[in-house]
Amino acid sequence: MSTVIKLSIAALSIISLSACKSIPSYTPDYSQARQQIAGINLNDQQALEVGQRFVAAFNTLGTPQFVDTAGQLYAEQLFINDTLAQFSSKQDLIKHFNGMNQRVSNVSVKLLNTTYQQDSAYVHWHMTYDFKFLGRNKTMSSYGISEIKINPAKQIVFQQDYWDPANGLYRSLPYVSGIYAWLTPFKKVT
Image (cartoon, rainbow, N blue to C red; front, side, top):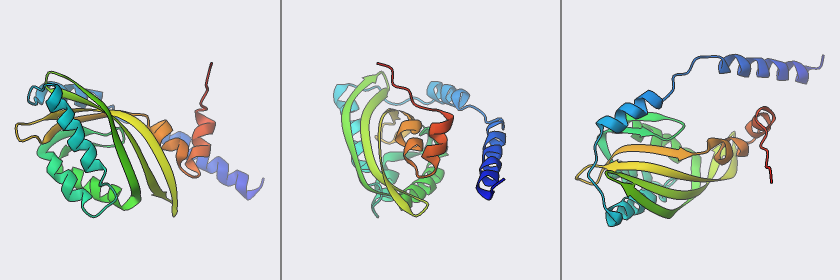
């Protein structure tokens, strides 16, 4: 058996075994946080302002001012689930932002629309960026919606992002995309 085949089988075995590991769902945390964390009740204009501040902050991602700009957007105690990570403190979120800031550049976030229900703003956005992975830059693009609650100081206290990492990230990463496409092929039925 060739070395490449042996390495491939070993890698797939490791991936398969790691997939068997029990990883807790974020659903109970989200449900509890959504019930316990209240924001201010919003109107159309306030929901639009939430979306505009959110997009403006993330348009600085990949620049020296991003961490400070985004840091001002969030309260000290919060609930954030961005699909890939979950945070309950601003300190941990800022560490995450520092890491993100080193791996992305050429970020463009566009606000598509906003709506609201009581204390939740729903911000529909489109983001493109260059992502550095294994020494290579790859342009990524993703659509998403963020459910956001703010406190009276207009800081985010609750954020749940809804976006598709399969399309916006995994299918675009060098090396990972081939394995991901093999494991979960995309089918377009017309």
